[in-house]
Length: 258
Image 1: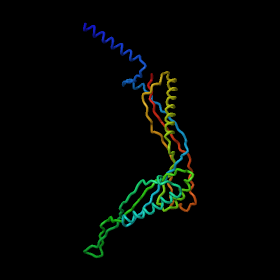
Image 2: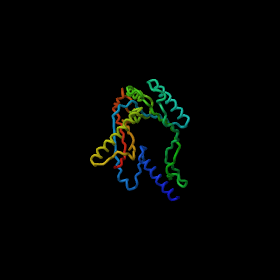
Image 3: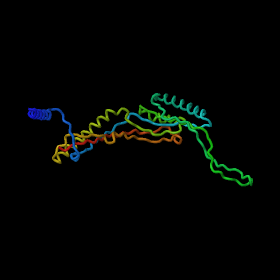
Image 4: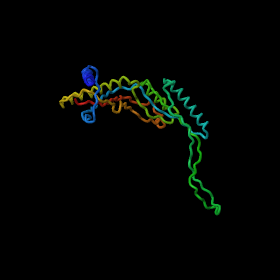
């Protein structure tokens, strides 16, 4: 009776397993080591040229003084005047952001010589000596220009201010989340289309996806240039073409040969 009961239980278990396998429930695909060779990875790509709607530019204000407080006061006064000017030409305070503020001592090296005690005319060279040479304060600022029609006017105004360096002028798309999603979908569709062509050429099925990754993400190249207004402050107007940005998406989709 015990053996019969065991056999009946085994049969019931087998029947239940067949019932589960034949159901409509999704089944997980597991590949063993030998089946890894059946995986094919295809790359899908998508790109789009988009006109930028935001410009960014960096500049710095720096001052050196015998003591830190004097250097700090000088930079703060200059920066207050610059921010007021930027606000007057249409920039919001929230779009003028300090990226770095540093206070550092500086030194210079001088030759140190002494008179020989034995002979007043003999000079001994003791090498270079580091001498304190004051404090330097530097403030780096990043400015966002949201109205591209004002870029040339704003850059001309910035060039007329008492600024030490203007650099890294760039153009970008401000809110590009929707474009990112659209490009990702287009790249996935591109990979699937390549899978259809390859499956037809090989005479196999490539339908089940077993892996996905984004290769390199979505790049947003931008135009960047360094402007030296110390030499070009006399220009009447800055000439700055905006152009277009190329947005790209790249995905890697892995299919299993069935």
